[in-house]
Length: 460
Ligand code: CA
Image (cartoon, rainbow, N blue to C red):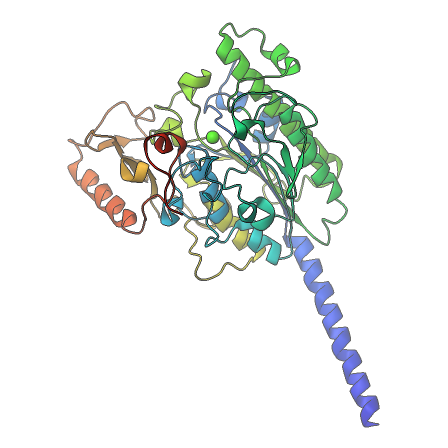
């Protein structure tokens, strides 16, 4: 009898456990969207149709924008490649952990430090499948690669850029290495932007049937339209009307990016996942205007600067199941918010020691919280030689030796008129805010390639 009871008891416990698991799986599939983060590389602020471009056709990104929340004051946390990505994947200001320059290829151990928890790590622990396709640029030593930082699957280029055609050669080891698939070298199979689009598309398809029981997170980081300016003829044909050769080649890379994004989004739709997939799109920094004849109009400055042209980027969020209509959000947001938003949405557990510095945007986007998020945004490069702080319409900016300049971005988005003398109290307040924020930063822990040429390599 006793045994029988115990057995029955055990059976009920098992039943409860199973039904509990089933319920939590059902609840999860109902509330947890797939998450697709698409990042462009060195894209000019004005170089997409929905951002005002007239000479570059980008129908796929325009269609995405037409069903998205367009963040008109969308920022990244750095004006160039690697630090922005460190901020995105850690959800923290990358100056907190010394990631303030691009790691040199000759220093494979330089990258996103293992002390930092990544977004795919917490999503993985929350039951998500995690994949990455594309440019890593966060350290290429074996222990620092995507598969070691929370991604179940990876295909792409481990460095900061790459030649676009298979078998192309140049003097850069970083730009000529084979692709990497889950830790193993693999020759590039086709034009790079096409291949990254096809790989991402295959990922979306492969996980479609599982998405009900296991949602997925895919980080798709294109290297287009970063140099080298090597467009495919198929893409170049669509911008043949651009007279300037440099801009034409750059525009060809943008067309390739648009087409590859279209490929992935079409697969999302065809596999029935468009409604419940949250898609983020932005560039990792502004256009390097002189290098590619990209355009950041009407913003001042370019990649490598803390003027708006370096840090304000095209920024979209689409999630038709939650936001069926397109809209605009004009308050400042930053790519650091992706981690906080996604973690809150998915109930992913973030270790208490890993202090996220973005915010959950959803309450603001759903109007449950009105107005602008109550926070300031900060930028610092060169260990503090250049920095900026934004608070509502105000931005205080230090560029090299010049005294800090104050701009009213609502009245003067092009940062043409320094009003520090007219608004000394605002300038003082923002300087104090920057100083306080900066107290919690550390010196850069590794050096960028140009620094390496002048100085001995940093100690490990
Ligand atoms: Ca970049």
